[in-house]
Amino acid sequence: MLARWAISRYMRLIPVWLQVSLAALVIIWLVWGMVFNTSKSGSLVGYNHTDRPLFRYFVDGNYGGNGGTTCCWSFEGDSVEVVWVLDVTPEDIEAGLEEEEHRVTLKMPEYSRDDQYLHVHFLPDNRVDLIWSHNIRSPKLDQYRRAGDERNE
Image (cartoon, rainbow, N blue to C red; front, side, top):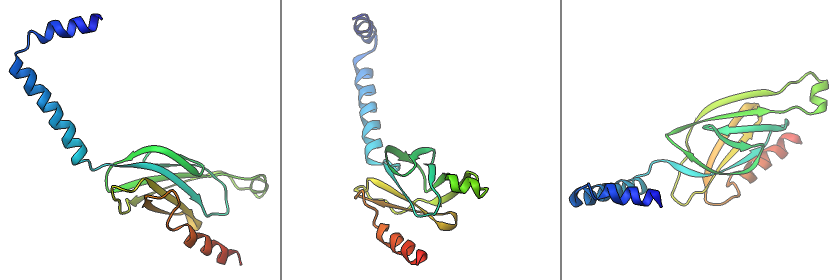
């Protein structure tokens, strides 16, 4: 109630032409941001194709968990930094392995307005592949599963 009173009292001090101009400026700024928005937004979907458990990962500081899907993130620019930590199992500890943190900067993959999911594939030899998709299932999932099956034969 007090805020409403204060706003109406001080708005009377501003000329109507200035109020209209400020309102128009705010509307133009909002429309400009929606039409010419260069950021990409969506969910992260992680896939671990390595022989080590994935402890956690981040894409441009956005938390991806340890696989699965996390929502809702925004990505700026033409490249992203992926940081991931490989975990250890009790067998790994006995073998002398420790958690390993890795990071890589990658070019942002092709993106369309329909895309909602950034798929992050963690591959052997500390490689990472990114792909946008409108579907929660990665277009490259079958390709990487076949490659893993061939590697295990």
